[in-house]
Image (tube, rainbow, N blue to C red; front, side, top):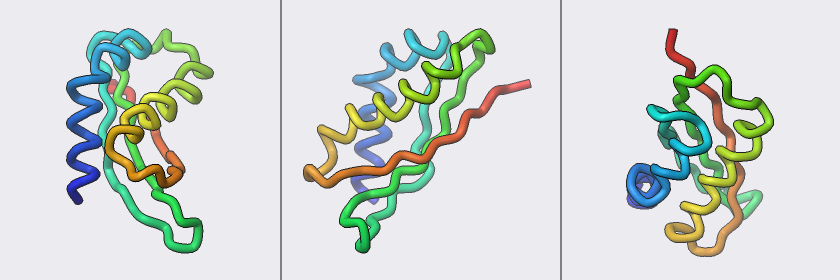
Length: 92
């Protein structure tokens, strides 16, 4: 639980400008779940990328969101590998 909270805090503060530069002014990432997978000896991170700019390149979303989460993980994680599963939320 603590790791999820710290990971979210890093995304909301330290990496906020990188997220808004890549995905648009009102974009942000929400960590929905952080689970340790014993069989893989790694963590599974489920996240939602909230964007408001429909002009964002799909490749940038596919590569950029996991990259930002991995950067935040280097501060929080104990050098355990991660698997990132994310979805994109676009408001109407």
